[in-house]
Length: 287
Image 1 (cartoon, rainbow, N blue to C red):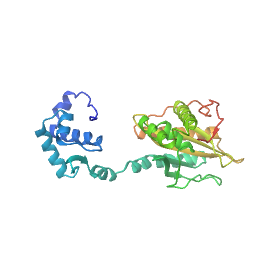
Image 2 (cartoon, rainbow, N blue to C red; image 1 turned 60 degrees about the vertical axis):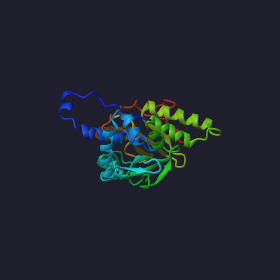
Image 3 (cartoon, rainbow, N blue to C red; image 1 turned 90 degrees about the vertical axis):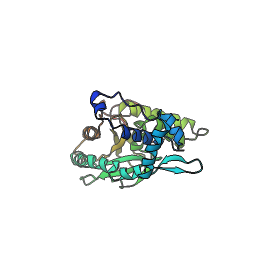
Image 4 (cartoon, one colour; image 1 turned 135 degrees about the vertical axis):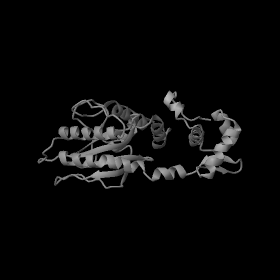
């Protein structure tokens, strides 16, 4: 049975202000969070190196407050949805949009292009927020729409910068192990290239003159919380070049990443196909 993450060594000040009872309760919650099948009282005590009596008092309090519940037939303890309910009072998606909205508005104005914010949702991406181009010509992505992970710049970008366990989960469900070995290998190679260069840069398969540029919005662990993507529409009257618009997009993504606790490194300029390494030469979207 997995145990809660090890705590860093406590400092003198940490020990001075320690709350042992609270620590025990949090240890139990963290342990049950990685035990979806539930655990009995004795299993919890053994995993935490505590006495059954110590654990019992904590379990009674947590159950009374609605954070855990027992289920038959073995009366094992499981987390309830109360923690999820507390998180929903100030959901991460709202914080993400709050941090990104003003920056996205500035990007759209300065680059004269539309920009959207995408997050992973199962095997698809979900358009969480968007700012349309102020120019007469632009590509507008519908807010709340869903798109295939494998066929979009945002999807590949999010997969490339996701936690390894998430990537493995996605790959196992996106590709059949018996019929799509080559397709999976090609997709994994693309993800590796995107991860190395720090962005995705692809030509739209269905619309001529559109190049999607996508940067990740990173957390403190370097994993993508979202993708900031610009479907750059080329036109004879464009006042901002694709290279200049790409720099504007990166500066915005870097600013938002800092607000989220992460750091987005500057890419090699000019941008180009992550696999070919050719500056300003995008590839075409594909699986």
